[in-house]
Image 1 (cartoon, rainbow, N blue to C red):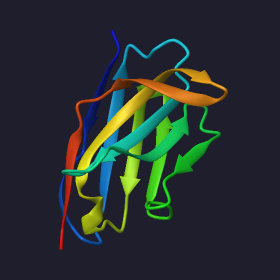
Image 2: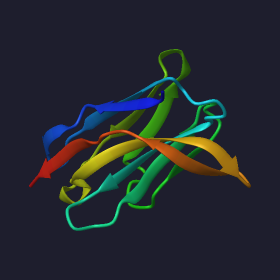
Image 3: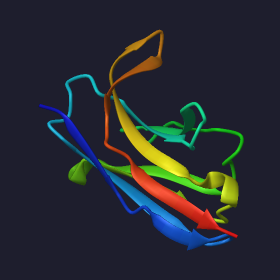
Length: 122
């Protein structure tokens, strides 16, 4: 059974940094891409970043480009999200997700973690 467990969330001042981790157990067959999403209160869940396990490809939402870095460690089945220069608008519950397959190179995310709270104070 596939399980994703996030950690590293917390309270930080604006301009500070946090590093989120997501460890996958029972990595799905044909899982090639890991993603981070976030959801603020009263808002829709939005895409943040994604990385291929090969490390060859990364993608970021415009709102976090230049501030966040996604990376993966195959040996540990762990994906990280390094968040720098945090802003109050980054406050949200952050979720990691794993694709189970792709359609025309688009990942289909079927596995989700429970989420970790990130709160940025001003």
